Amino acid sequence: MKILVIEDDKESAAYIARGLTEHGHVVDRAETGRDGLFHAGDGGYDVLIVDRMLPGIDGLGLVRTLRASGVKTPVLFLTALGGVGDRVQGLEAGGDDYLVKPFAFAELLARLNALARRPPLQEVQTLFRVADLEMDVLRRAVSRAGRRIELQPREFSLLEFLLRHAGRVVTRTMLLEGVWDFHFDPRTNIVETHMSRLRAKLNEGGLPNLIATLRGAGYMIHTEE
Image 1 (cartoon, rainbow, N blue to C red):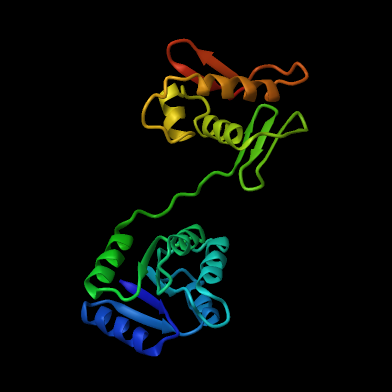
Image 2: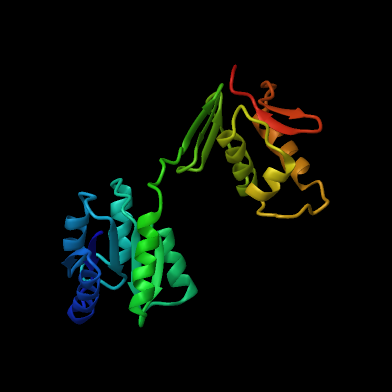
């Protein structure tokens, strides 16, 4: 693998680079966030090892910038910040894995190998248009026939799930798992209640219904006018 280590601690960076080189990997190093961004920007590496606490641009800012630029190289955050909140921040910034210092080199190597085996990321659709309905996932915006529709978070997630499966039957179980993260049936009408509220908002003003109920099967959002 070709690996870029972005670490300002020279001793740590040298230790990592030496160990990876001994295992047959090609290793480049960068000591600042700005240098790391410059080297990683062309996407020519198999994996990036990024320290959270970097001079200039910190690790989170570096990875956010790379992701915004379309660079999908797997990122392993390596840092002394080991709290749950720190790990969540790293993953939400676009990191793929998180290893806390001090660490065993064998674990670092295993995690890098696992990241390298992952299939390339697929483009995730963030803009949907069905008939006169539009949803922009990034802007959290929904409109129909040019009219802005205000949805509650769960209603938004429900509509997004339906749109990602447009033209296909979506069962109640799929919605419970995909929208509510329930892996059991709560034996309530939670799906039906939210579906009714969502339909009322989408169909306001007498607009035709886009979400069909298929008795005994589930729901399907129409893909044609």
